[in-house]
Length: 607
Image 1 (cartoon, rainbow, N blue to C red):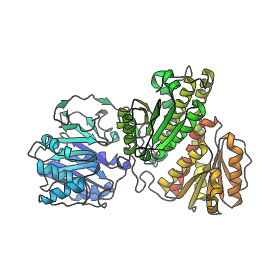
Image 2 (cartoon, rainbow, N blue to C red; image 1 turned 60 degrees about the horizontal axis):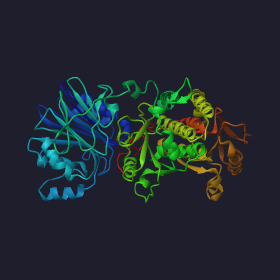
Image 3 (cartoon, rainbow, N blue to C red; image 1 turned 90 degrees about the horizontal axis):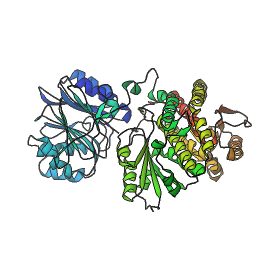
Image 4 (cartoon, rainbow, N blue to C red; image 1 turned 30 degrees about the horizontal axis):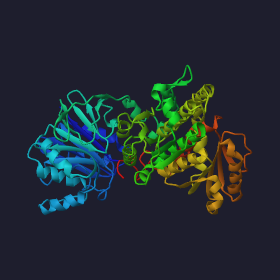
């Protein structure tokens, strides 16, 4: 949620700030602004709506300077308008702050400040921070932060500019992402590495409560007590082209088409393709740990939770280990009973999802070993877990996750195969057979992507549809859940997913000739049962789309999309490509803002 950018150097900062904000538009926002330190002191420009409005404001009222901060805001406290947009300043207009997160005790602090004569302009929690800093500042912002930060409760990533030290920026984080980029005669701050790729691939990853002081030539880190800290520089593996559309109309379509490459890259990282064996040093379990394992709990949110449900099915089916999948926002508050030799697996594309971070910390507090699956190297979840498996998907810009989801499923495939082999449930030869089939998945994905025009034409015929039901059994049901979420996210169509066997328990009452039912039938053990459910909805006049990799009797008037044949356990990683394309083209038919759906943010870093 929201986007932060900061720059200090020897050239004008406005172009850099706007570029950084533009690269983070996908995070979701409803207003934008910048604050610049120049010859005229601290100058702030803000606008409601898209960045184009801020650019128009800057054309009419230009600012210039070599140090500045910027922000794209996703409203939490106060409606989305120019007044509530960031940056916020103190009453004197000498201190400016941009902020991601939520200050939970802002009302209490605001009341205290009002009693001291402070006058507020906005409804935001962020202005409280700006007013506190301005009230306490005596010309040494580092000392001021030591005084103010202990007053704040909640989550935050803060970047501060002050007219008293016009060539310096300060930043600090608590449960919100922040990255600092090192350049030549210039340094950068952002909430997302994508904002920095055009300028540098050398970054620092500050830990919670560490304060960074940044000038054009120096980046210094300090502990909460003010003592200096040495930090290691990190190299970002992504390049700037990875965060560009490269000829595609939308990032989402580009990322759908990048899935064969993402799957192949992730496979090569974890599988020795010459010997068809897993690279043991990159897998999270030893043989002893696998044999002793008695329970697995998977925690995640949204799309990552659907990948976790796939993981539950795969691990139970192949490795014969009890697994439960929990929504992280529920897990963090529920009464959980830790089991001896239980391991928790946390799944998050960004590695910063607030509820999943909290779930990780709860599991760690309970003494459990925690493994993470994420896409961002050095993210909070990656750093705080005992072992991490990275999805090598590259930067995912569209809000609706596609390639991160498919690579998360792939990692669960590999974990399940590894555990099954280590526990004696799968022989070495059977493991090689499964890995050989996984290596064929990218090519089979390409076969589906080649059918994009067929999918587009189908959505053209279905553009008047207002209700879409996805049905399936076992792993096909989990695919249905993800398909329904994708369609809701970007097309705003009413869509629901149902376990096909549950139709008769109420849902079938909603089926008529205006309803599109998408049936997924790849699981051989329940194929006949699923086809019986297909006949039930056909008999009630529903429009029918069927996805299958088996020989089936095609129901009358049903459209069938053929899925390349593979092992049942691997079929969902192929069917999801069709379902993502379906969601994309339905949204395109309806004229939706596909990469930036309304009310949504890419990384949910607040509750």
